[in-house]
Image 1 (cartoon, rainbow, N blue to C red):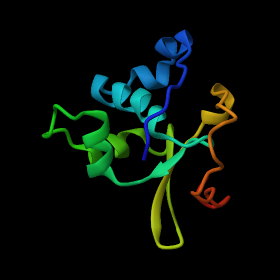
Image 2: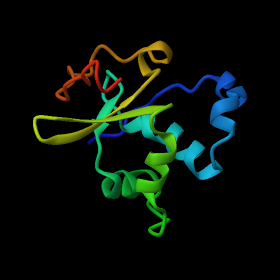
Image 3: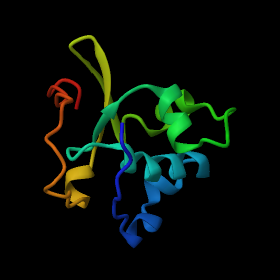
Length: 113
């Protein structure tokens, strides 16, 4: 999993639903984008995501944060025996670099959305 540069729009600060979440969940959500592939997907591996997103806070409960973000902001799903995560509005808000390779993580099924 390689971190990438992503753009966060200033309007995100005014998202009322996101503002209802803990500050920890808000920050996790924003930094999660930097670990997503070009489709907004990443392996749903809370321990690893916690280490990547909050390396200096080992007591952070990434599973609880992901539960707080789901299902409104992220979709958690399984495909081929692997747990995956999709940021719901990722494609609406990001212009990915064409040099990024194609995603290797399958899309969630319509039942997961």
